[in-house]
Image (cartoon, rainbow, N blue to C red; front, side, top):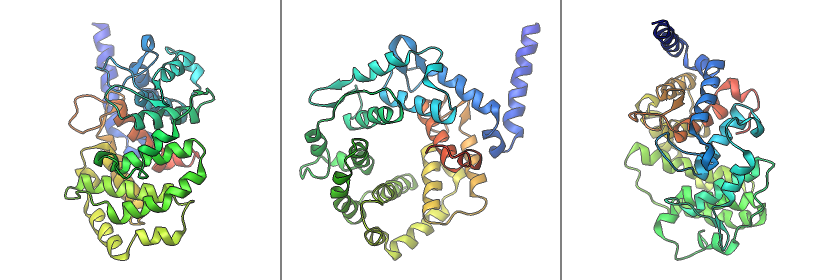
Length: 322
């Protein structure tokens, strides 16, 4: 009986904590951060030396490990040596095990380009060195330099990963070489379906991501031409009509706020509205990816934390790495 009373008291306290704090206060509370730390432990798989994307999954992945390590080190500010149930050296050996000849990372049910950019992002963030090289011919074949590139690889998220791999390989001259043709293609030639708000937000986000990513490699005039006045005004008008509360995927909240910030159309109430919308995804110490999901996962949690890194004043003012 006494344990039932304690449990009910804990649940009642949790409900009060979650419902009675404003979204901004909730996300900067120590209880929230402690919950995230506990949540990450549940997604670690010691016998497989990595993290999994969902509790139900039996498979670890580079993406899940990247999400978890980024949250663990940058948001919680904890050293890898403090991971209680994973051996950091064994975890990096697990990542190395995905490396295949001629020189990239390969996982089941994942595009190698995404596995590779996540592996090298981990390598870039942490002192441990994967000590594995990427085949530049393979990378070129997956870029816009390949005139016979498959349509699915023309997706801007895919090609942004290509550019980021070149950056992670410390090849600024190559990035500069590709910058103009990439901007020309994604500003003027790439014509995706933007009929839904979801597809519109995704397309505009990655178009802007290309511009920001390549800002040091091209002139401001080239970037300005990418944002024609007529198209810019139409984009601003459409963005202003989308409400944070109507979005049911947590990535889209991040996309919308990022775009409104970029186009300088943020209203004073937008931070509060967006944080309130993100809070609706919070469940069992993590975040759901889609509002109707039954349980949270690492993807939803990563994008919620990424939003806080970049836009919540409490974390932004601490000069956290973005």
